[in-house]
Image (cartoon, protein in one colour):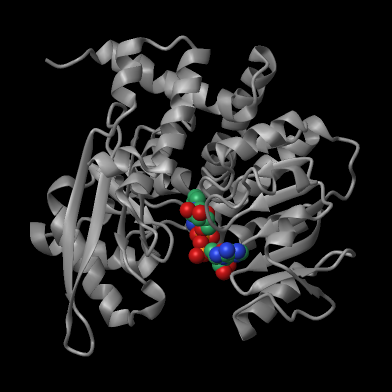
Length: 418
Ligand code: NAD
């Protein structure tokens, strides 16, 4: 336990809360309770490998807070998964859900493993055994997992199936991000990238209305990065650089994103796309662009490279791509940073819509989903921007003040039990 309390990502999340608590004069009892997770479960996940050997993996599910409703948050399969990182991500989910006015607390889970080296059958055994081990603390009224790094619709279907087999009937509402055929929602796949693009557009309108074809660089061309690229391209912006785990490409005249999608489908990477020049993956972050969207992994902008970033606006598509030190350096340079709890909240918003549809057994059209998503994202952006201007704080502080404030109000009125 001591180990996770010293994890740098957890300490960063706690420090962010402490700073916001100070700025908003948060009640000290509520502040103290919000600094730690409500429940953390560590489980062994033994699986049989395809070659007949047995491997014992470690899994986690952390529920940071459940004041406003059941907790909500993704499950990642990755070799970097630690209790400390999962706890920090659970805390950020609490603020994100409250900021978007969703009736949820925050949670996160993960299994420490190398998914790239596992077969589909091995992945299925990990998903099912992990679900069995955390079964007692999840459920549509308790804690609702969703996909995250290296987990997807199929993983959610296995989790839903395992849970349903245990209780004896189909429970689609136990997870979100499922295939539509088992109670998933239309519009989920595009939700996060659509939301990122919406916040970028609104930030540009507020801060740089004079720019008529803003330039954009995007790190990561997976679900979030590629959908963000498509929506920004469709809004008339010039996406001049993108990257994936294999490297980065650049074309100052702008990349044809539709053709890039085709190329990706054929080759599995953005590298080598016609008319583009290959550049170093990390150099993409330092491109001279109006907007930078880190949409891959955490901690990519640190005190080591922050002063070389040239973008006017950074939208955090990924969770935690900027360290606290980098944040300060960039703020001092006047960069407008749209924090992840706002920029990438589209995914959890549509997850909420999926859960609502599952428990009502009534499904919506894609148009209805998209219209409600845009409404909640615009409302959250406007509230954050208004507070940012009124309190003269940065956007991250404003977003956290709103999220933390909503949880604190509910905690105060509910009281401390017993
Ligand atoms: P994904 O697995 O679909 O895509 C990840 C992309 O990043 C891939 O293109 C991969 O090649 C690339 N990548 C990995 N390491 C890289 C590196 N070092 N440099 C450059 N590119 C690299 O994942 P995703 O769902 O798009 O998620 C991306 C980030 O967004 C994660 O931090 C995730 O937690 C966050 N996020 C995702 C959602 C969602 O709905 N998918 C919602 C909120 C936040």
